[in-house]
Image (tube, rainbow, N blue to C red; front, side):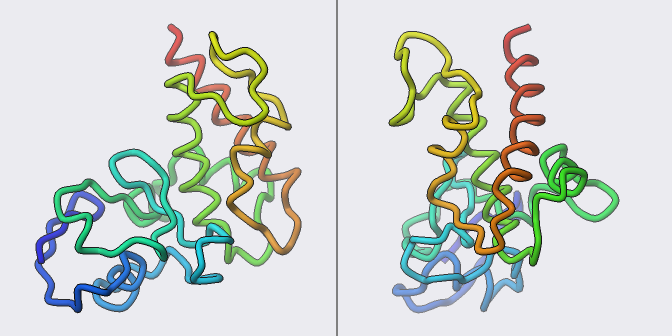
Length: 171
């Protein structure tokens, strides 16, 4: 099977029942994404596929041979962090760090949804860009659990980066 992850082409032989998460962790040594619940309920395994966030524990790798897949390893690295990673550090938006990569990947996907004007369950006006409220962020990030309860810091980090990203998009 041929697959593109983090702008790198891979050719691997794996069982067709292998999840995207297991492919990355067990076969490609891309261990940033975590296996939390293995049932799509915690978000620790969140990756971006064609710019959209997915739970990689719930999807088969073979389904994504023609897709652009980005894991946390494809976003930034020590010494070259992306703004969201920097904001998580500066806002102390992690405790144990286990959920952090999923939170960051999900936040990046969420910002793209906001740029495109996608409403959430709590969005009031459907004819304009949703406001960047705590409630809006909490709803959009509800698929990512932080057992250490760093939610206020996570929301602050996301707000800081999203406000900048959304204002750049409007200029």
